[in-house]
Length: 65
Length: 208
Image 1 (cartoon, rainbow over the protein chains, first blue to last red):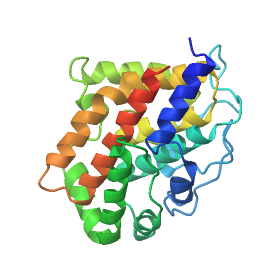
Image 2 (image 1 turned 45 degrees about the vertical axis):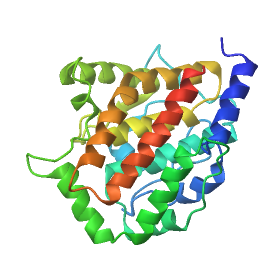
Image 3 (image 1 turned 45 degrees about the horizontal axis):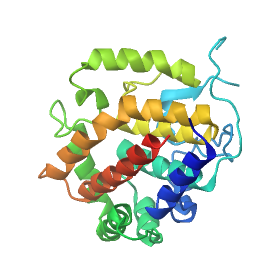
């Protein structure tokens, strides 16, 4: 099952291929919300107040309130 | 929702590598949802390179090329390109709906399965929307949501299951079609980066 060894190798893999370093894309992520004026920040469980991109705001909303 | 199904709960803090995955999913969802505006193109062009070790440079290389393409792109031309590729009245060159690529199960059945699954993930369609749930951007956005929604084993299994069922079989044909399309320019690089990222996702989720 998913033991810590598996998690470590997965993490190592992600870092090795460049997919595990948050710095590069994080700066862009904050700007990816289309400028529609009414896009709202929404606190997500486990996240840090990520801006929901507009389409998911349109398509779905989390039902866990 | 009343519900017995409440799998998406605040879990442990999201690990840095998962936060990074979430950012990639967010960016890709945005790029497949609509053409990037000038500010987004600039942000991509101005961003740093991805670190990569040894021979595993496919993602970093695809990212470098996407940055170069973003630096050279004209926002208006990219908007026209997006419309011609994905919108076109009745004859879009490339469909962005994943079920179009999951032929063996059939579009309707994929949509039905997806609609059954979303409530269990704590998501539902908003009434006013016109888009079916299997838009590629929506699938990527759901992955982002799942990645930031928990880091325990159950959360990872949810990610793997959703990725395998909906993203895995769609991303290759979809990105291949874009790359092969004569109308694609900037989106060829979006497609190549998407493929490189989904390849990494497929490999890392397989490790679970």
